Image (cartoon, rainbow, N blue to C red; front, side, top):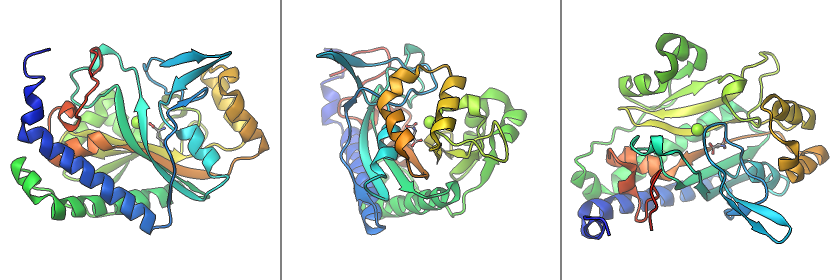
Length: 306
Ligand code: ASP
Ligand code: MG
């Protein structure tokens, strides 16, 4: 056992961070249930999952004549769930085999939980409002309930004022280049939006604006003080022709999305939603450098953890 591995379990630091994470989860669940959302169960294994547009390896196993994958995000299942329910959320464990280069960013885990949410018939603007209200509600709740923990971390939580600033991707990119998120996150004092990503930057399911080809109706929320990305989300493609077109543009194997495409052919509702990482939010709330401190059993890129 590595030195310190055992000792970290008796440190105040871990206990306080886990208490804050539990409080964030409670506030999110209560807020959403009080606002007409239904909590659905997480999907852990499925033959089809989010392809993710970055360097995330595939995790899965053979089972009888098929293959299961571990969920990278529940996006496909969220869209299909809306055939049964109008407003859904789930605390969804995600497994993303991140490369070892991301081990020291302080914000990447191989296993994490996100609050994933989707609303039938919603626009991106509807979702921005939901997020702004949800985030301010959660921060107020934590400030009220976790005084001792915040004191321990010497963290003064400022409650942001909606509406949050919106910055277009191409403005940010033209000004700061590839590292715009990092630069802006350090510069800003309250959470802000990056909107309108170019379609080749994101997954096939974020909806292309019909009046602006190549630009998506999507967004990231970025924390201030250098804490970086909080969430990604957007309006969704639901027209099967457009879905297949976007999959082809990204050179995805249609066969890998066979069951999802059957649902799309039969008709998926229009929708919008997002996924917000619980550990990243806890890191921000507690003002921690290392996301590892938000987990009892952290799985860091490039190492094997319990
Ligand atoms: N697919 C996003 C993610 O997990 C979340 C979303 O768009 O709902 O990164
Ligand atoms: Mg993202």
